[in-house]
Image 1 (tube, rainbow, N blue to C red):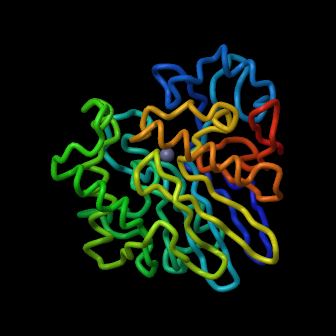
Image 2 (image 1 turned 90 degrees about the vertical axis):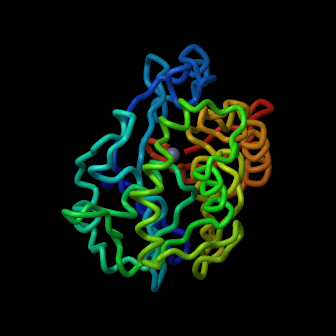
Image 3 (image 1 turned 120 degrees about the vertical axis):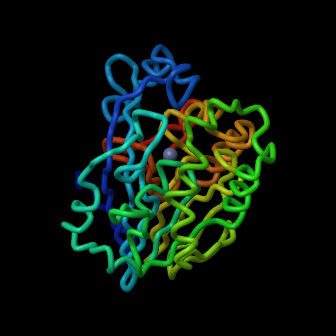
Length: 301
Ligand SMILES: [Zn+2]
């Protein structure tokens, strides 16, 4: 589904959806505190970001940044054919790659792949199955991954206790090892990965912003051109409801206190500015501006 494009100076950002779903908050969903009764009280979420039952509308999509001379894919979703524990992710067979190519974004034409972090739903299309093994989907691209993020997951896979308080069940659900082996290691082996710092400049007008808490090395992406600015959130903000309730951490945040602080400072910095905030898992219109509202914040479309 290709139905949103934003312009920031001479840069465009296009949303390419892999899957969309309506999910409950609460204990069985991505945001345990976002129970239907609380969500239904946030009337500004309607109709774009929540349904009549108080369920959260969510999306997994890539954001395609076209600068005057570079094509960069931010986050590569879940991918096809990957064996995963969760039914949401297991052995997908979507038209994502064909949809990308229908935009003229052929696999060979992509200059860069940028991963906000290395979770299962952000690295999937880094690779594809060629019939015998996982190979880089974009053979001419440089894959930008955060050095802090990469080192964190490397420690995790060596068995160090890097996520105290997280149950083995949660980590298993995230398929950390399988994700690393089929979607990260093959691009490292192909020497396509450049490990970058949390505030790296990726290309003219595109830089990273450290937004830790969901993972220690998590970054958001700042796009600036012609006096305009946009920020791609990554999973610092899974859903716009977290603008109003910063402490509604995801069950998958490695440090929910830190992610809460990150959301607070992010809102303070960007509220009531013209900066366009583009959500990595925000469904519907996917983007808007943060405004102050009754002592908190909300999204204005
Ligand atoms: Zn995610």
